[in-house]
Image (cartoon, rainbow, N blue to C red; front, side):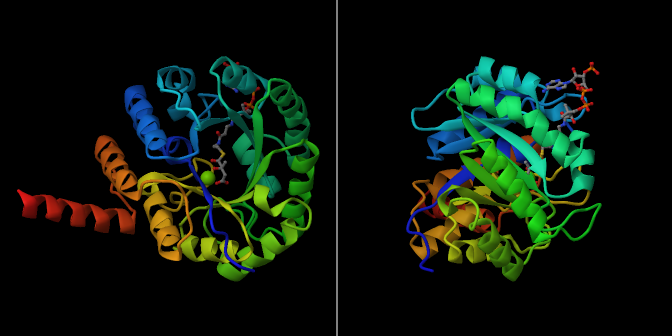
Length: 308
Ligand code: HMG
Ligand code: MG
């Protein structure tokens, strides 16, 4: 299959990236991060989560973050909502898209949202319906689609099953997530081959964590399956509090560099994203793990010195 000519990159750093930080990141830093990402051209910024602050304390300032950001025309600000309480928060905060998040693994579902897969879907029914009634976009995210830290292997049939359940909830988009970054290219190809039989290809996304260094190869495999939406985290921020040892999402700078090289349009300014990666890594005192980001930053800084 020919590679797509254009892809949508969903920046998930402010949510997936920061949720795992032990030290509380000041609300103003989160707000600046979201504003700068939107200004760099991301059509969709996953901004925060309306979840229990006991479960994920870092997202406890969700309402304040949403109240503090500028709203750019053309940018969708997404938030995670595990239940009706989360949805109420999302509506009050004027989110543009809500994310209901389930798993293809029973064990991970219990650890992450404290219920079975079937119970989670029941819980999502009123959330998705009320969100639609309010005119919000609804995205369904499927964790552990390529492997689970508790269960091990995850059958492709389990992923397809959750895709079908999310489809029945009228999800606009469905994320196929490699929460612990264990997938490899051929596995990715087989999973997308299976899920595209039951849900439109152009509304599926690849959400890859880079724990085993496979994320870019996996994105390339998904591109070959015609997938047009990818999630990434600036500076490779992140990890999942309920998946020990999992590292961040694939770094956005690396994905943009890949897409630029392939001539695939994103509408996003890579140079700006490189600066944002430096800003947030410095602000939270964490190494920037984007290879392209660090290389481009070094090049930009050396050119500034040459010109001085
Ligand atoms: P629970 O303990 O079973 O539920 O948690 P509960 O209803 O008994 O509530 C417990 C407490 O939380 C109560 O407070 C509720 O009021 C409160 P208390 O009475 O003890 O003072 N509460 C809330 N507070 C704020 N906002 C809410 C909310 N709901 C309840 N919406 C629950 C169940 C789902 C709430 C909990 O398990 C939870 O919040 N989990 C969130 C887990 C999470 O955010 N994980 C990370 C995101 S998923 C991810 O990263 C994967 C992804 O990136 C894709 C991938 O890579 O795989 C998406
Ligand atoms: Mg994730």
